[in-house]
Amino acid sequence: MEFFLKSNQYSVKVYETTIEDEEKFIEFFETNYMLFKDHLILIHGSLSQKIKEYLEFKSLTYLHNVELPKGRSRKALEEELQIERSASAVSVQIAEAKLKKISSKLQNNLTVLDTMVRSGQEINIEGDLLLLNRVNSGATINIKGNLIITNVVEGAVRCSGNFMMLTASPKANIIFHGVEVENDLLKNKLNRVELKNNEIIITPVLKKEISWA
Amino acid sequence: MGIVIAVISGKGGVGKTTATANLGLGIGLNSQRCVVVDFDIGQRNLDMILGLENRVVFDMVQVMDGEASLKQALIKSKVSEKLFFLAASQSKDKSVLESSKVEKLVLQLKEDFDFVILDSPAGIESGFEHTIEFADAAIVVVNPEVSSIRDADRAIGILDSKSNKVKQGEEVAKYLIINRIVADMVESGEMLNSEDILDILDIKLLGKVPEDKGVIDASNQGKPVILDKKSIAGQAYTRISGRLCGKQIDMKDIEISDSGLFKKIAGMFR
Image 1 (cartoon, chains in turn cyan, purple):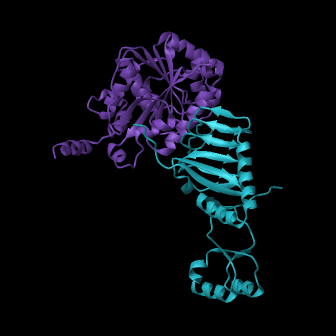
Image 2 (spheres, rainbow over the protein chains, first blue to last red):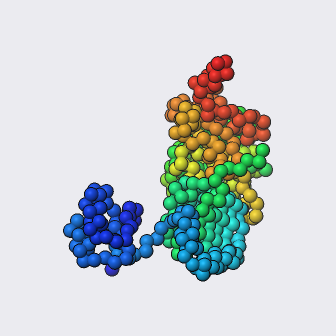
């Protein structure tokens, strides 16, 4: 007996909202139906029977109170931190303690490699890796720990550490903790990708080329 | 003792056999003793490009099996008396190759010639592995396109892990020939430029060969294009074989088209 696993991957647009006024919500959807008909509607908070029926009647696909994996910009997180800060000093301390925790986990069994990873080659490492050479198209790197690559990446990278440092990698296929990191988010000269509070945050470290002349 | 050079590419159809024939002849014309061996067993075509198809009596598998002596099987080129050719077998396939037999043959050729050039089959299967196994150096032939570069990258990776020299802790010298460059397309950005290719493959550049319609006709007639002094590809192969024989020859920039050069000069007087 043979089994066939058929699967597909899609990128979908998600409209995320919390319903405060049901009438306004329906009115808003009536006017913007064309815009949202192909979106996945994600509703946080309470969801009444009336809204449910409305969404089903319009054959809109929706999810209720679900956390989706997503890469977020540094700015958004900072804004959130700012709100938290004003709300309570205690939560700020917790947030900072979490940040410290990450930096204490930075090193475990560091491997330093200066070899070129050519097409068809695969590198599997349990700990951290500092790679000083290229990862060519068709090559694969699987890392359990943290990853720093100082040269161009065109191959596939699977990392499940606390952070990655990558140069601009427009052609790479990068998967961090099972989530694909969009190449558009890695446009800068040097980018830090890290996992904080179950969110993937991408921070530009160097925006431009540094010239010493 | 001579040097054994494997001509490899990964992808097929990039001009490996044409390059082998032209370099062999170029080395012969530089008065160095050279032998070219067609390792593409089961698919003989180097003999045609060299114009020696009618003279093949014994092939390299027969030499390895002791059915013929090396002297009987070697065919002298019509153009250069320094160049010899050893044909591939057409009746057998790649599975007949055995490491010990290949090593014996290669060592024997190394004794008698300054350059032993092995024309590898396309792909990365056993035939390819036997070609690179006892090579001292490799010439990687690529076309300026992504699929060729990726396959070459893969072939270099295998060379770096499976060659005998690497297993003994030494390094195999690797040289790059970029074949079929069209200057106009490089200028317009449609074709990869050589700097990008060298960045990806990270090996030493031996030479660049421009696209030249004369190559096909030359191959069909069995007169390698290097013999045509007017052909731009022929001139490129003359430069490359000169470099292989130790001459200092500057890289010619063939990635600027004549019209592009004219525009540059015209711009200077504006």
